[in-house]
Structures are given as structure tokens and as C-alpha cells.
Length: 150
Image 1 (tube, rainbow, N blue to C red):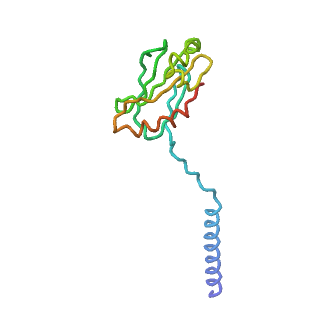
Image 2 (cartoon, one colour):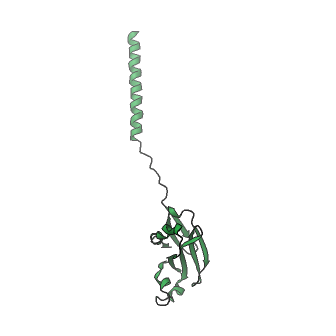
Image 3 (cartoon, rainbow, N blue to C red):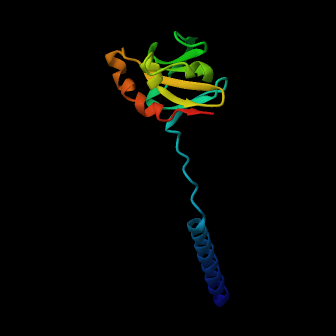
């Protein structure tokens, strides 16, 4: 009887030890779940005219206001924070842009960012930005490097 009790205790210990080993090894060999990072950018995409631009997270809460352009048939899009325009994207037909010369309109001519099959896009940062938004204005050149026409 004593031998039977000892044998059962040994079997129980081996069973417990085996179970413990199996569960700890299983846990160690399972692949780690990849950590999904939050996007580090905000993307604005205009499907009507076919362009997009990426903004840093510091632009959270931005708005885009479409307005009639001063020098083009098509609209201009003002990218705003706190009701201040930080930069603007203007849309031109290819025919319209082909009439713009560097001598007549160097600002527009020099701010061409991209084109697609229908349109030419120009973009320029605002010259009058409040001190509170000055850092956002500094980011504009990096933002405009992400400009894409589709």
C-alpha cells in the first residue's frame, strides 16, 4: 500500500512537472503579436481634382476651405488651423497654366507642385501667420514635399 501511494505521488509529480514544462515552452515559442503603431500623419485627399497631401499630427483639427481663385478658373484650397490659412493649393487646367509665364506671374509659375492628366497644381505657404501658428508655417515646405497628383 505504501508503495502504491509513493507511486501515485511520483506519477502526480511527473504529470504536474510535464504539464508545467509543456505550458511554459508553448508560451515561449508562440510568436509575439506585432504592435500596431498609430499613423504618424494625417492625409488629405481631394478626389474631385486628384491630389493628396500628408500633414503631421501637429495639424490635428485642420480644415480645408474651397474658394474661388483670384487668378484661375478652378478653385483654391486653403489649409487652415484656428481659422488662419497656413498654405493654399490652386488648381489650373493644363491649358490655363500653359499661358502663365515666369515673367508675368513668377509666384504662380514658381510654385508648381505637380500635375495629372487634367490639372496643374500650385501651392504656397501664407506670408501672414500669427505667432501662435508660426511653427505650423515652418512645417509647410516638408508638407508640400508629400504633395501627389493622381
